[in-house]
Length: 158
Image (cartoon, rainbow, N blue to C red; front, side, top):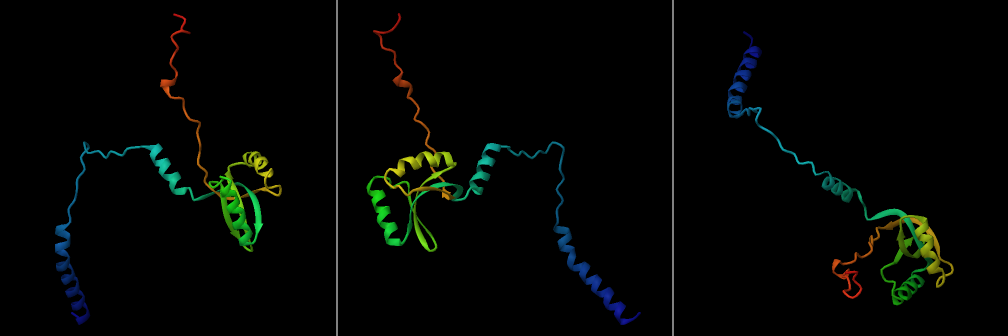
């Protein structure tokens, strides 16, 4: 027997001896037909989770641009708008080389055009811009509380 074959056999024997503890410690799990895996299918929750992860800070929508120019002019105009009580709507945006004052976040051009008519009275150069705008809060009309629908006894048909 050649020394190479002898070394090869010795290597295989040593490898088998060292692998014995690994093989003996492995366990096999048997599944029975009565074993079940319960997966809840809460699709609404899964969809909401998916949407919240996909939704960025901005969306493709419309805004009203009131000013485009230098930083000091933009800051003065922003201060005026905030002083008039419109502090929720105003944004200072920098798109090189100008600073822009934009107000509102609208999902479609119709909403933006309706809001533009109000802003045109104070800022005649205002116009609608399609751009990425921050998500706007959805305001639902307040529901009428149930306790306010009482019937007046005097006007009752009974």
